[in-house]
Length: 207
Image (cartoon, rainbow, N blue to C red; front, side):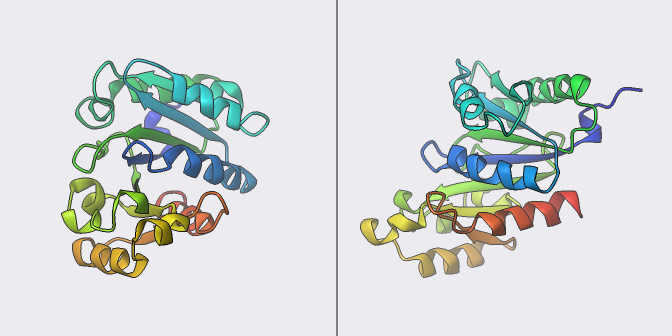
């Protein structure tokens, strides 16, 4: 019997537009590939596949072109990751037709703090990405994206001095509202990406 989406590990990566999800994927995927993992990537968008095309360019020579795909949700992207994940699940199945030994699929979707949560049928593990440029009060607003994700990623830490954000305040507030881990990243320098990779390994691949 051919493998289906139930046979491959999945990680959801959500967060607001501009939080750095694409940059995080750009840094994370090559590290996962270096582990010897076959990785697929899905980018959700409303009416275009522009994000997928951008990722395909960034992963040229790293990930086969047919393992980077876009899903046009036709509505807010969270519809395709939360209410009805069928389009994403079908895309994973399509990956597996040509890559039956696929180890992991990363599913990226934009969405605000309330919307970007993943249906458990779609994602075994979820990351929610915020940027310090959005303000240091994001964690204490307690949205489901922040509270319910398996790993909260606080990105663009290099901007903290320029926007008046205190990383210690963000860390303390995150600890107040959630039980899971928090990773601080600067995708430009690669800082913190290894910690994210380790959390993904522990939470999904070697759980």
